[in-house]
Length: 267
Image 1: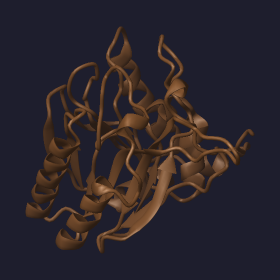
Image 2: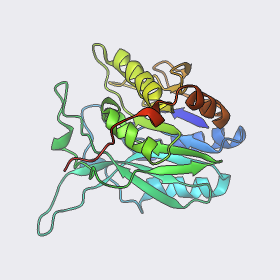
Image 3: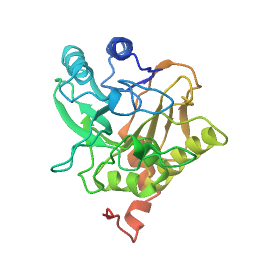
């Protein structure tokens, strides 16, 4: 699995070039999966909205599909797509989405971010439309491992990760453009470790590098041990995941079996 901590900008063409380079890096090391951050198609630290949106048939997803088919590398990538207008009305917002493309180049799923970042002085909902909380979880199987997807601010809501585990995800993937600020890097790390421990799952947080965001991608094992942690600079790293390690942790700590509550979306 290759983690591409890129520094996307509002230059969509340059972002696609960086993504193409990340595919080549993943292909060289024979990775099965490439993971890119939130907003990999286009990013502005002041806010992302409809001006950055591209349809699923547009150039960014088209590049993902073409490179996946060429290399055999599946990909999870953050992008921005136009919002669905309500019947009889226009909506000038966009949707923060993560797309899943398999190793044949087929677009197999799209996750629309449920929890918008209306916190710490920011109102993402002014620019973005939230995804439906009752939508089926996005889980992509690659090389026999099940990768479930949430996005950035979703990490602060443990029920989002638990819902993925209920859908048999073994790895919780969190593409993010985690905003910089006081305690933010500490929160990112602590929340990722907590989600891993409480779900006895691997947590893969892929952060955006660049202005206004922290980078700091990391991989946390199901026992809470941080096996990879990057700094704030753009970089590409590849790690191996062993499902046997996950099984061993869940056998020793059967907290998922012992739980007494379920998770249900709130309308």
